[in-house]
Amino acid sequence: MAVSPESMPEKPFDFRAPPPSPIASGRRSCVTNDDVLSEFLEHSLRVPDLILPDTVFPRQKFVENPPKIDFQLLNSMDSDSLPRIMDSIASIGCFQLVNYGIPCESIRSALAAAAGIFQLPPEKRTAVTRSPEKLYGFEEVHLEDEGDVSEEFVWCRCEGLKLEMEGIWPVGYSNFSQKMENLLSDIEKVAEKILLIIRESFPQKSGYENDMMKGQDMVGSACYFYKHSRNFSADKWSSSLRYDVIRMLIRGIDYSHALCLHICDGSSEFHVYSKKGWVSFFPEKDALVITIGDQTQASSGGQFKHVIGRPIYKGEKEDYISMAFLYAPPTPTITTSRVDPEKGKTISLSQQAIAAILLTLVYHILVYVYNKF
Image (tube, rainbow, N blue to C red):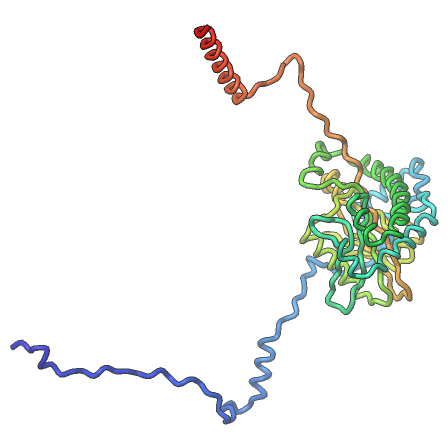
């Protein structure tokens, strides 16, 4: 017997109200020991201290002072001196140069003039701050420790830098720039001779000049000025060097160079970092510390490695300024290829097609004019 819908009992709908919102009550937590829970949460939410492995930043080790050579005796060096220099370059990437013929007065005069750069107020420095598009000017240094360990300024023979610096330092910059021009000319003469001796020790890589020019703006030589603040601990100097290494790995090489000549008189130590390790030594008084650049690494086929060098001033009662000259030899002028007169000039397919179209149009015009008249 069929049951009609009217005879079926109606089932009431089950409306369930949403659960009540949690309301803070004045009762104490049911946890028996709130201190244990608080301590657990504090340790769980704490960000761990990350320590880079030694494979990236190996432990610092002191080495015997790298050999020093007399620049005036380069042409008459005995047979044992040159191999020792090459071994030092291959092992730690640097050596020392003495009696290089640049008057101490020229260096001191340039350093004294450079002190005025770091006295410019921060609001003026902003206009000449370095950027990926502008390789010269002031470098912003930010470290986790209190204060900055050093201030940096990059000088080069650039018309843009000259115009910007004369705008914020009209009185002193022309005098500073002239002293730097004279000093850089002397530095380049020294570096040119040193680089020639180094390159004679290994076969030159074919096509090296063209490979180095690809993808790089060859801006020539430049100079990094570092102002080292007083009374900073060795740990902060180590942090500064690590910061330089990280910055190089992230941004790459700003200025491609063959050699870097460091003027760091009065420094307590000199630190050199490379993929082979992190070494330190005590530089000789009035000596130039010369480190290897990326261009020399490329031309030597990787025999000599590019390194980063930085002088360290410990426990000094005054600020010091050091200079690092990045020497890049002038690149040969690229001349246009000459056409062999016996082979003639090659005409592309597109040029041939255009010539055929033009000849066809001229033919039709001539036929039209002939039939018309």
